[in-house]
Image 1: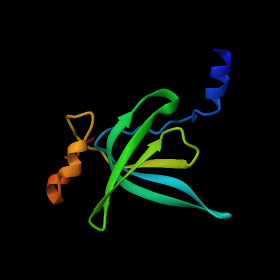
Image 2: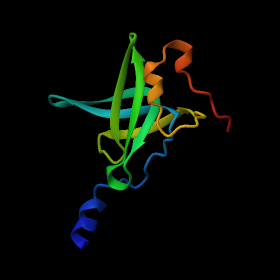
Image 3: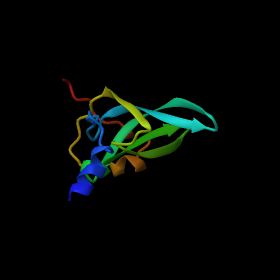
Image 4: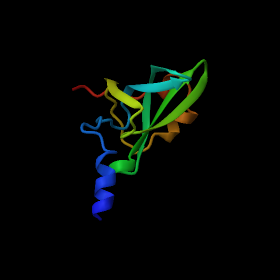
Length: 114
């Protein structure tokens, strides 16, 4: 048990980003191309969260040039620099997979007023 605790301590971030289903987020991802490193921003809608604890992931979906693109990001990944919340969404589902079938305005999520 102690070995597992020591192993997971280094993997968990001090401050985990708080993302909820339906939020529109900007995920700053560190990309390594050969010797160089740069930060790429992936902006989209959070359609799912899975697992919990160390292995927690969230799925972000965006439409690029008319094609839907989804990426799964581990919350505790060292490649995820930061997660900015652009707008808060008001949804009534835990998973928004139905958004995949929607096009245009039908693929929108209502905004939560804070």
